[in-house]
Length: 408
Ligand code: PMP
Image (cartoon, rainbow, N blue to C red; front, top):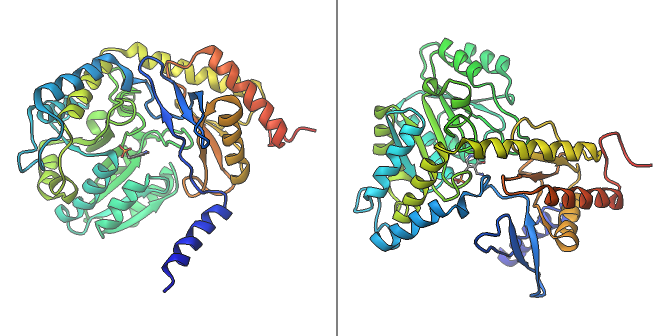
């Protein structure tokens, strides 16, 4: 085997499909969010505005959060020192789990080192607890949910995205006495659409299924206290397992599930992704707890965030830019071609000081390549003026389709 050639071929393939990923080297300075300094490949530096951060509310810069982290480092040092079972459970982990359970109105919560691990570990473990489990999974579920479902080696059925009729047909076909679970998301992060949570719960109840809801792009952002879309829709108590991240709106890192005490205890007892890995550092747990607590009390941040997203959508539409019909804080603009998408993203960064990553296949289907903007409460009207002007110029320069069709 020519190993060198095999690696080269794999890389050539992603290059030729226009989806070779290059990471921008950014340095951030406290107090300047959402600005950052980008180091160009030649070593020179340029100020840029970051338009694609998943630190949706800028909580990573909130002094309440960073002070809690500093304090925990001073009190407890850096790492956690072990798995949760072997000396890695501290008062910070315990307090954070209590805070998260409380946020979602559940009896208990369980921390993982990321949202990805939470999904993979929880979903792959449920089969061990519920032999014969059939999982019904939305076709656009995140890679971490798919990994968990596949690794659990249970039977699974994929229903068309947000299609409750299709879900019902699949539930109806399944043996009535088999244990079942419907796994879905609230906010889908690439299109910005939101699922019908109440409708999904009603179907799950009708066919005796549990519900598993990924609120990764909604926790901290929706609901009176930031409990997610299920809180906003008044159905949080009817979802069996809520999964979330601490790495996006809460501005830190880590993942979790929240559910009835027995469900959490069983997953805690069987999930490899929980048991066999070093737990989160105390400082991350302390920072996340401070962030959750602060956001529960500051609904005005969520209101401002939604206003910023609505304003950006309106500004794009007024400029004839093909903004996709998102009903959330996510603002995707369709390019429809991987090479153009990458080119526009590169030119935005190099020529206009605008940082937004291209979203290409396999993250989204071919032909729907896009730029995905995530305005935060800290993006100003002036930043929007600059962004819209830059996109307008590049759309003309590259002759990309506008809302009403191609320019003459
Ligand atoms: N679920 C969804 C829907 C996601 O988009 C992501 C990450 N982008 C995750 C889970 C994983 O979360 P984390 O980044 O905390 O690992």
